[in-house]
Each structure stands twice: as C-alpha cells, then as structure tokens.
Image 1 (cartoon, rainbow, N blue to C red):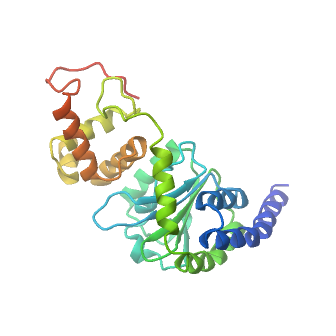
Image 2: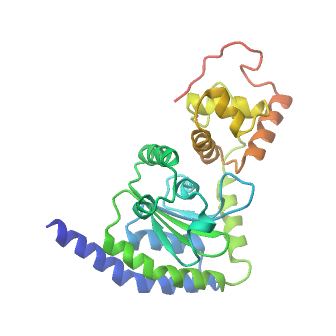
Amino acid sequence: MIEDAQERSSKSVDIGCLDILAEWVETLHGQGELNGALQRLIKVTHAHAAFIARHQEGRISLKMIAAAGHPQGRPPCFLNEMLENPKDDLRIGATLSLKEAQRNRNTRPAKLQVLHADLAAYAIRDLLAVRLAENDFLELHFEHTLPEADRSLLAIMGPTLAKTWQSRLPGTAERARSRFRTRRGTRQPDPQVLHLSNPFGLTRSEFRVCMLVREGLLIDKIANKLNVLEPTIRAHLRSIYMKTGISCHVELLHRLTHELSSAAPAGATGATPRLHLN
C-alpha cells in the first residue's frame, strides 16, 4: 500500500510537471507573479516551501527574490549549510537533494550536524536545490523524505527551469524582489531586536550572539567567545536574519548600534535583565 501511495504521488508529480513548466515559462515572460508559480510548484511536488534566492559574495545569507509556502512567506535558507560552496558544487541546471549532498560528502560533518538540528526545528525532512543561473538558486523544502522517483523527475525539470530562468523577461527578478520586500514591509515599524519583550522570539543563544555582534565582533571571535564552532554561529545568525528580516551581518550590526544610540536598549547598563527568551 505504501508503494501504491508513492506510485500515485510520483504520477501526480509527473503529470503536473508539464503544467508547472508551462506556467513557469509564462510567468517569466510577464504573465503572472513568480510567487504564484512557486505556489503551483509546491503543490505539484508536495513540497512545504519554495524560494528563489541569489548568492552574493561577502554575505552570509542569500538575497531572497521570491518565496512561497512558509507561514511567514520567508523560509530559512539551508543551501549554504548543505553545500560548502554552492557555486562550485552545483552546476547550472543541476539538482541536488540533501541525501545526495551527504552521500557525495559535499559538506563537513560539523556543518551537517548544525543543518540537521535546524531542519528538525522546522520539521523539515528533506531539501532539494536547483541552480538556476550563475548566482540564482531554487530551493524546495519537504516535510517528508523525497521519493527517488520524484527526485528524478525534478532532476529532469532542472535544466528547463534554469534555461527559461536565464531567458526571462528583463526585470522579472527585480519586480519579484520588490513585491517580496513590500509584503515584508506591511508590518508595523520594527521593534528593537534586543528589547526585553523579545519581540522576534530570539533564543538565549541568539540573543547572546546579537550582543556580541553589537560589540563589533566577527564570526570567528564570537565563536571563540562562546566556545562553539563557527558553523554554529552562522546557524544562529541565519535564524536571526529569518526572524528579524535582516539580510546580513553588516546590516545587523548597523541596526543594533543604531538602536543603542537612538534609545539605549534595556540591559545596556550592565544589569541582568529579565528577558522573555524562547
């Protein structure tokens, strides 16, 4: 019965592939929104979330272009944890699942430990990445282990997704990025990251990382200070970025120092505050 269910799932993906590819092409030529195409892709592939992100040199996190499926519309990115160097480990048009990355030893064991802990926190069982262009990647999250048949079908789709992405109508990514940022910007003005009420739901470790970032420490120094591995600090930073909407280390430092100068955050005097930490 399990095999029958998997066979039905694979057939539904197979049938839906043609439809999603057609919709994908239409979207990239100005007929529809990229977010809608991702929603359709999620439905066809039985994924939990999908997003397109851009790799930029010198940034810890990827620049989000479009996202769908995650409750906050901003799923955390795991590509940098799954691969040591995504641009070297994944050719354009190729796909790579978490299982393949582990089998191929694309990632150090220490980073894999952090990755699995993060995935468990989000109830994610599997990942699949597609390299769309030189710096652009599609990432799919699954709450179940991806069947081999479905992975193979997605691998077949990969080159077409990449080729059509590269020939997209000029401005498509920029418009999608603008809409994504607008949806994020509809909330009320951001509260202080280190406020006593802990408005972003930071964990105790994340709060401590923010305190050290505000002091001007870089990742290696923070890791030494807290006596943990650098990948652990990167994982905390990625979680902080996801929760706060901040995009990189420099932006986090700027925001924390601005908050300190504009209105001294609670706890800045050295007293031990009563924090509402997760």
